[in-house]
Length: 342
Ligand code: PEP
Ligand code: MN
Image (spheres, rainbow, N blue to C red):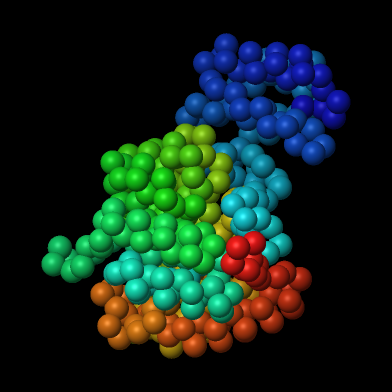
């Protein structure tokens, strides 16, 4: 809409979009209001809209995804979490914790140690998507309760995975961020449920997903009304088994050009070996990632899942020190945890 378009003019545009059989999404911005049109599966004849009073221009979104695109929204999305933590602004957030929640002592001790080193969000799966049915499947709901306890004791926010639409409600009750795992990136029923869960979602790139497919999956979440979506590059299947995955650092600037959504990096799953996690975390921050997610355990050698890629707490502290320096070079800052009780 033109700068200074009246609410009536915006309303008229909305009404015509609805008359044409589509849905309208008015988006008031700093300079002017945009009205998004969704529900079409091809180019829309916008001649009726172009002629309405107050309309400045018609922009056809050229990509198959819309609401996640920079054409739809030029300004980067900043997701505000409890405690003043923001994802997608100038600060870089660090999410750390074990692959799986194993027991109370393990999760509380991990939470304390990652917080001491500078993490602001605790990760840990209560529901685990495992390649083998005989591997540890996670503690389930009792694991969620332990995460809630770890948050109470440390003030860290909690990011944990939901694996099926039925469990999204339980996960969303506890989690500050609901994680959708790589294996579920195209589980469309789960995406729809997570889009309605009322909590921010961390969407991980699928094992063999293109960037377009990642953004289309994110579109499912926005289409359900959830605008708080964080994307996560965690590596894709490569041809070389030397690393667990091929960690696609270039996806970070590419996604940032195509989408206004924040993108973080998970170099733990990206490489599969703890010795490679620090260099790739540094690379991800240098490439512009809005955050880093890494696996940390007080004794990785006894971890019930993903021990080989899990950092020792001392390594995590080193990672934090190094990415603070890199953030500074590119005019950013790593978010620091608030003191307990603050
Ligand atoms: C995880 O974060 O522990 C996990 C299972 O990751 P991904 O879905 O990326 O494999
Ligand atoms: Mn893991």
